[in-house]
Length: 474
Ligand code: 5AD
Ligand code: SF4
Image (tube, rainbow, N blue to C red; front, top):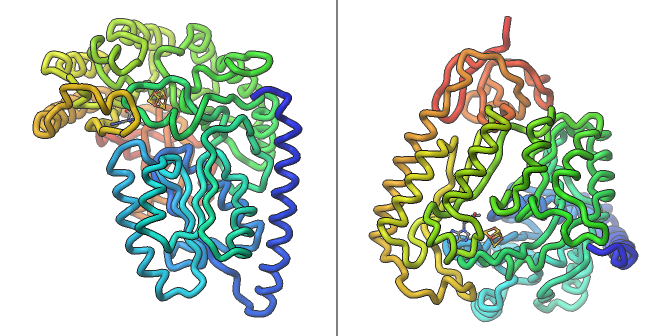
């Protein structure tokens, strides 16, 4: 973001705060009359960007006077949608049908849809025609306007639709909720300029915009003061952070500055694009005491021919060289990845290149996806779309290979003592706590709930493949 926009952002924030306060007066009066707060429920689909956006939505609604509820039978229900793959859209349509039935028995219920799927004209058309009970539709660029859209809806009683194609605004100073008191996601950039040929994200999240470094640092300093010890820096392509700032700055430099903030003990980030991962960043990783020993480095395909068709701008060989450099600099680094199977034109030979990379890298974990055709992306009109049975068969083979590879690397820290950020009471067994190692592996161990939110040393007694069972050292 250029600094010239900062004033515009502040003015917008002031306007929205005023509307929030106007609504709050009405909501408080109603609460005095009825003794009951109106409730809201957010259903978040998709990635960590959406989770962070949902925290912003929550912050605004709580400030207005809404109370959050687990139940979808709430006064205000919001779906923060994802559209990265076709089945993400189908899930939303399925849930919406159910919500329409709930609304029939819940007078005054409001329904809002937002997020990536709403940035697609065809999805919005379908909702306007087939789901007329939806009250508010907004997109990824104007979440900060939620209070204003709500006010318009309450005054007009019509479906309110506000969708922006793109924006250069970054309004980050509104009230925002933090789901967790010791871990926080921090947006460092928005949008994506990469246009990988299969991916809808650049069309629905707009052009790449970095936040000013000083704003990010200020936010993290405040978080640290509030007791946050781990930050997750969020962006579609964090390695190109800062390129479009008035005074350009590298991601490596930003990390160095964050490292200096007292109280912050762990720094994570995602997602990294291999083509932009610089030697400067590797040096910073190597020397850092706070940056976690985990890197999510999506490969997508191991075939150089397909990588070119995907517009990824690296080759199988350059990716493997990068992995070698990373492992040489940070030997205990854990690598994870994303892989797409069945991209248009994928041959058995291309697929074997992907299997080869999995074998050579030894990922701790990989997220695998069957290629999904996204209308509007270049890959959707490519010839030789792969038949589903072929893609499924390759997908199964790939999963087996990944299991082999992660089984090999898992357990390498067995019988050592490691630092663990204690996150919660174990969801299966309430006598145990669950925490996370720097390399992102989970550890379950007996301990006092008071340890939640702190970093403790745990003996990793037994590897269970994807997690460890541990105990506090004597
Ligand atoms: N089909 C399948 N997977 C996709 N991804 C993105 N677009 C598609 C698509 N059209 C995967 C990529 C990306 C992850 C978030 O989702 O692997 O890294
Ligand atoms: Fe999509 Fe590629 Fe951007 Fe990632 S880098 S969001 S895969 S276009």
